[in-house]
Image (cartoon, rainbow, N blue to C red; front, side, top):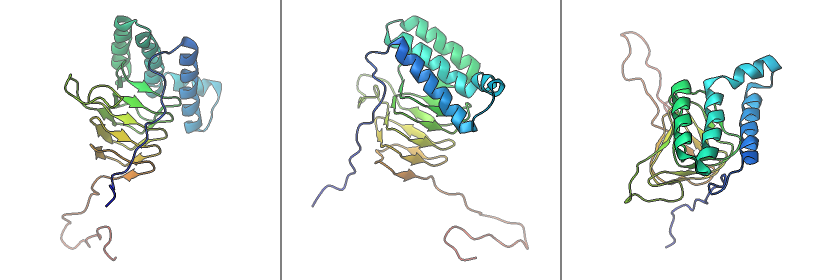
Length: 212
């Protein structure tokens, strides 16, 4: 009998061993153009406004302190990380690796640890994490942290926890709490809400799958 466990490939991400300032500039540009595309283009005035929004500003500052961290300026990177956290409310560790063209739609509650692929979409109050320690498994994202593929979408409040792999083009629905490997092109949903009580005399709406 064959093993039915899905095979999830290792995603393509930014090289964490070397990162030049020219590469950092390209990453910054790719993030901003992804945001501009998300908003449907715009005038110069609008683009200046978008630059200072916390959802983009967090990524801009992250690219700078990530560059500093990879190139050995750890203390300066951590200071800039704290500044970014205070200004934007977004927590992206200096040890986190993120590919090009990342999009944060809403800044509040976003927390990112691990190794994340290109064209990541984060819709708000979502993120990745796990734990730290010598005994925790490291699959490439750091001790206890996940590895996320390319073109992955995180819905509102979707979370990925632990040393697991999320395949390319996976879509994590709102409030999805993922603690296991996810294959390419998968869609993960949380338990849908349902009506448990209505006012007397009000017709009860059907649950999913029930006839009207």
